[in-house]
Length: 411
Image (cartoon, rainbow, N blue to C red; front, side, top):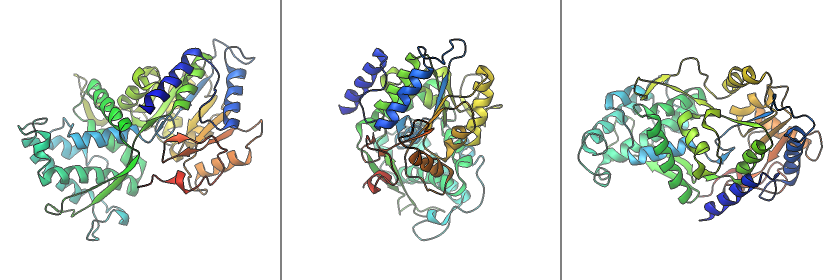
């Protein structure tokens, strides 16, 4: 398969510890990153073994193409891979969710607004039926058998819709913790296995838009709803290569992600996926666990929500406290990364994966700075283009705009 060939090339580059060569890097970005490796790496004039430089990477849509936690969630929902009882799920989907109506773009097909109350009622009702009938939960029927019931389509469509509605209405402070609650009752190894299966399935699937619509024969209180998302997660050989080159040159590499910690540890640390990242160097979303290691619905005490300002807070608490200084390289793609991109005076380079953000947003302004300084030796912000129809980096200069084909996955 093509992704295995690309993975092999990336692993080869890591093993030989060469500077960044080949691939789809923009030439200027490659040169700037190689210069950083040469100046601050173990053979450079600034390197001190007792004060190693370190880099911090966002994960979703930066280190990979698309979002691994969303991919795991989509797979979990489709395969009914839940361990929560109906009463536990009832709590998990409501925790931290405001009671107001969702934004108008999430109205049902009849044009009526929806809230957590109406949507949660339908989700739990159908989950209770599935819980009592599906052999993978507490019943006796196969997955194919329960798929014939409208309760399957009602549950899967509405719980996936709920995540999208929460994100689009209330933003990351609500939606990012919410999606982690779906792992309630699981252990670390169970989340890792689920994540692994989801990644393998995504890598084998085409890059495409997926739409689920709840069945009209079971409208419930919320009515008929639809939800669409992008599918086809891909590994990024250039980022695998960069991780390896940094480590080979004596840099410590860290991941700071708004996805759940067990999910990120599996994709970043499992050698099957080519990043070979130490699991102890992941800063991500955390939940409390019981005495048997099963995940609870409460956010872990003393840990930040690693999104936006929370990423800076986590880096300061865990990394600046450890090293005494900030990251020399930061990589990200979104508004959720802009704080850590700007908040550390020690940062020399910031790599931004270009996803055509609004020029009025802060991340859009940073992209404009990258565009204005393109070709200059003192450029701090490096804008790397990407084609969302292939998941591949674009080797041409990452000017704005890069064309409509980058901004959306075609149907």
